[in-house]
Amino acid sequence: MLRTYGVEAARATILREAQSVFAAYGIGVDPRHLGLIADFMTHQGGYRACNRIGIESSVSPFLKMSFETAAHFLTDATLRSAEDDLRTPSARLCVRAALSERYRSNRDTGKAHDMKGSGTMHPLSSEVVKACLPSGQVKSFPTNCLSLMTISGAKGSLVNFSQISCLLGQQELEGRRVPRMASGKTLPCFAPYDAGARSCGFVGDRFLSGLRPQEYYFHCMAGREGLIDTTVKTSRSGYLQR
Image 1 (cartoon, rainbow, N blue to C red):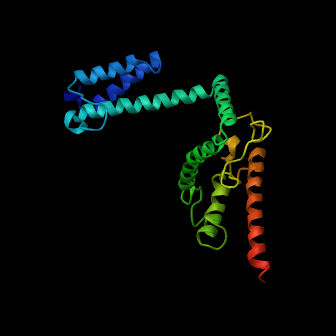
Image 2 (tube, rainbow, N blue to C red):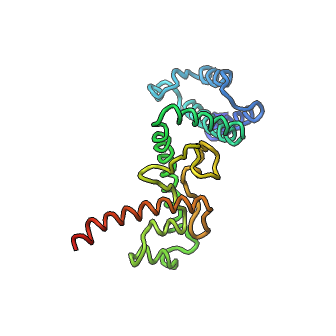
Image 3 (tube, rainbow, N blue to C red):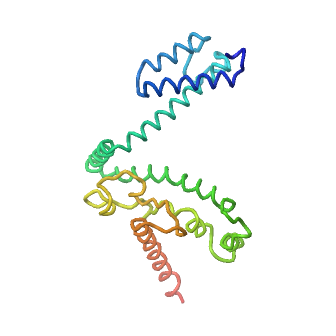
């Protein structure tokens, strides 16, 4: 295949065969799958190690590309399978039970969970804003009046523009996500110890299309904290000295 049709055709054939196998038998942690790949690599010309050390000198470029293609496919298929499994009610119940046990046994679990969740969602929000502003609008600058107002510096900022056109993002209170009540809920409408980003204060909607009641409540909580901080700072630095 490689000598007759070239590298790209061989790569497509390997990927197609792998998709056929996993479509027929599914994907899971099965030693036979890994054994088949290892046997193929060893038989075809000296695959000596699975790590990056010495891979350039010991493996031909085609074998290296074949292994990376197979590894990439396995990773994507595993992630998709895990996401599909988490959509089932039984899997969500297991996750909630595990979170409940961790929260009750260790008081620092909430802080670690918030750091991990915020670190995952912040880059996502940044990518959405970067894709939409300023050139991703239906009417771009300078025909877009809101874009013209914020970019020119007349009034408003990029934060206001993104909240109107893109999303509000993660709402934080004192540097952390929305805290949980004693019942494990962030709001009465959510399930106890719900691990979803939306139940922890992530607002994926925007002002232009409207917010859901839960998202509006989270945004009001964060806005109240910012208003109190501004009031306290002004009273200490402004009015008393004047």
